[in-house]
Amino acid sequence: MEVKKYNRIFTIVIDSLGVGALEDAADYGDAGTDTLGHISQSVQEFSIPNLQRLGMANLHLLKQVPPVKRPLGYYGKLSEASVGKDTMTGHWEMMGLHITTPFRTFTETGFPPELLAELSARTGRIIIGNKSASGTEILEELAEEEIATGHMIVYTSADSVLQICGNEETFGLEELYRCCEIAREITMKDEWKVGRVIARPYVGRKKGEFKRTSNRHDYALKPYGRTALDALKDAGFAVISVGKIFDIFDGEGLTESNKSKSSVHGMEQTIEIAKRDFQGLCYVNLVDFDALWGHRRDAEGYARELERFDVKLGELLELLQEDDLLLITADHGNDPTHTGTDHTREKVPFLAWSPFMKGHGRLKDADTFAVVGASIAGNFGVEMPEGTIGSSILEQLV
View 1 (tube, rainbow, N blue to C red):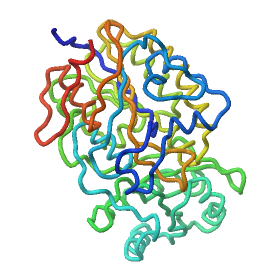
View 2 (view 1 turned 180 degrees about the vertical axis):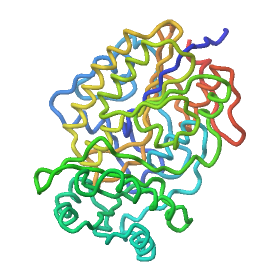
View 3 (view 1 turned 90 degrees about the horizontal axis):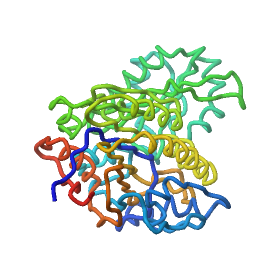
C-alpha cells in the first residue's frame, strides 16, 4: 500500500505529559511515576473528549475517561533513548539527536563560586540567591531586596538551567537580557555547561504582588548536530514554530517563530496557522503544563489545563484537511504527585490522526522519541541528517 503523503503536519508537544515510568526510571529516582495517570486519580472531575476521541484513554487507563470503541486514529507510547529527562533532551531527540552526555545541573550545590565571581564582575552586580528554587518562591524571598539594592537574583532548578530574575521597572528588560547573554557565554565552559540560561522578568513591588511576565527569554545551546528541522528547511519546506520551540533549538532549522503567552494562546496561534496555506511542519510546544502545574506539584491545575487544551484541540480538529496530519506527544514527564519538583523519567504518548485515515488502533511502542522527526522527514521525502536516530512509522498510519 502506498504511504499517504501529507501537505501539512502539525506536531503538538504537551510539555511534560508522561504516561508511565520508563524501565530505568529508578535510576533517576522516578520509579512508579505516571503524570497522566496520577492526575486522573487525584481529581474528581476530568473531561477531555477530544483527546478521548483520539485514543488517549485507550492508550492509558483513566479513572473518569473510558476508552472509545473506535478511536479516530492511532496511539502508542514512546520511550526516550537519550540520558536525562529535560526539555531540550526530549525535543532534540524528537528531531533525531541522541543525547549521551547529560547537561550539567547544580540543584544540590548551587553554582560554583568561580562562576558567580565571573558573572558578578562582568555584569557589575552583586548576586543573591544561588540555590534551587521555584520561580515564585525565589521572588517572594528576594525580589524586595533586588528592587531595593539593585542586586541580581540568580537561581537554578532541577533542570540544567541558570535563571536570572529582573523586575521590568527597576532592573529593566534590556539589562536583564544583557546579563543573561553574559551568563550564557560564561556557561559555555564544559564544567559549567547548562542547557539553558533563562531571563525571568517580573512585575510588582512587594511580597504577594510579584508576578512573572511573558517576556521570558531562553538562551539555549545550539543543537550539536543537524536535525530533522534543518533538513526540512534546507529542502524548502516551511518549519513554523509555536511557543518555546525557538528557544529550545536556538532558532536552528526554523522558517518562522511565534512566541506564546500561554498554552491556550499557543493553541490559538496554531489554529490561526491551520487557516493558512503552507507546505511543511507546524511544531508546537505548550509549556504551561510543565511550568505552572508539574513543577508546582498541582494535579488539579494540570487537569484543568488539559481540559482547556482539549477545547482548543476540538477547534483545531475541525480545521484539518484530508492532506493534514496531526501528531500529539510530550517531551518528558512531570508527575505532580511525585516528590520534589523535578521532571520525571517517563514514556510519552504518541497520537496520530488525519481526516484521510481509514484505520485506527494501537501502535507498537517505540524505543525512541526520534520516530517523530523521522516520520515527518519521511513524509516530505527528506533524508534525515547524518548521525541522527529514528525511523519513520508512517507506513503504520493508514
